Image (cartoon, rainbow over all chains, first blue to last red; front, side, top):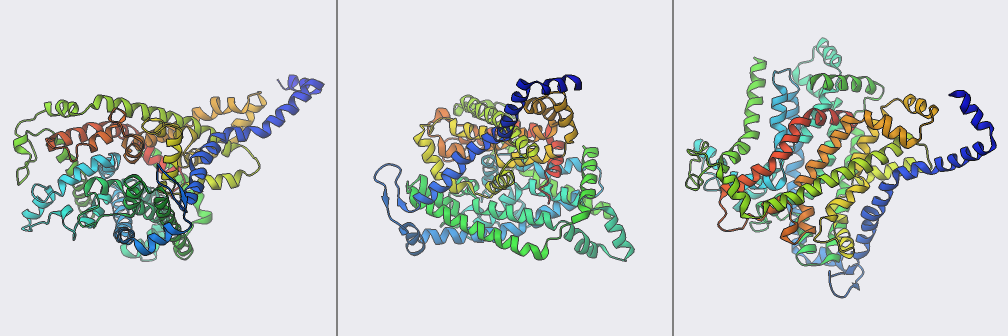
Length: 328
Length: 270
């Protein structure tokens, strides 16, 4: 084999071929990533820039397109109570949902990380709701929350509490939305679980030798070791909170009294109900800016609280892979 | 003692997560008289399996199923092919601008879909794709950042010596990908298929925005039509809810070890 290889290259035509091949070789990587480049240009970058352009226009889906400069943005801030209302609802939702989501997901992951029999069954139970479509979840929750027949109010009545009509009560509708959203967040729990399994056991052992109790170990070993996972989940939760739409569309339609009228729904209605494409694009860009700012702030702050394992990283990861493979 | 607390909590929370699902199933089996009882009846006195067939026929769910299958299968296939090619390109080649382009791939994950939603709609409208299944299928043939990232991470873990050995034997880059890399990528390709299948099967906003005509509807859109339809009983809604949840549940059941393992190997844990 090696001999023929040598022979070939000594011939002039072969050298040409090799040269050609090398030139093609230079193009090859671009050919491999071409699908992504094409998709990026036509389905992401193009639309992204176009969306910025149309936000400066009065752009109905049919009819005359007029350049109006910053009017869409001015209108939004100065003359649109629904904008402020939906922004406020979304921020309130995020303020409840993001921390609760982290706490619940981490709590469940820690429970699953115990050495118990049947952990696969429990893991499946916690993850199950996130497998089901948002539409199906919304249907189930509209039934759970029903004021007259709902199981939630049934359980409360067993405890002697008269439950409200959750989705039709302005005091409770947003809370109901938060709880229903938490229920479908199993993937965050799995990510935490992976993070917890990556913590080297000897850290806990040496903490024990130093006389650390359970709470001390949790605060000084567990939390610092999973801060990168917390960061990841924090950012994805913030983005998810701002994009919340399906549940609201199906459960409440934004009501009652706009108490669950999320920003994404405001944007959706401006575009596809009132066909104000330019205005809705301006809404979208404003949301993008908020999310970017929040993400940036979280990233900035993370320098102070996220602990990267650095050198130690490789070893626990190997261990982790082996352990998950062994489990399954 | 510690064990008892752990088990109690685990069982308690499991019930909390399972109860509404269990209730959906039993509601689907109830007869109309038992639907609106309070306190609710957990186990129906008569199990009406005929509810499923009846609910399925209220709307053309056979057609919706066909549409959904078409979208799900074609877009999953598209993601598998395109993301494998792109991930291989990023993982195994040195080329100008590679690191920058890969950073762009990662950055696209941060862009909320809402920002590109309107121009995409206009683009598809211009192409005449609105009210067809094309907007739900074709973009997946050009790769998703998340899967590209996931597959690239995986290919990076495969030893380069394998490629080198094959190159000496005269294999082209494409042959290396198809004959050496892809056969080793099994678990991560399964993971991509499962994720894409589920997100496509469960998608609501895409079909809601791009489809108007009932003959093009997908299952989730068909189910959502039940809301606000008079004369549809809760047992029909729950019957459809249960039926359309079976495929993702079945897939999850068989693929759960890849899901859990996959999250551990993607590197997203930090």
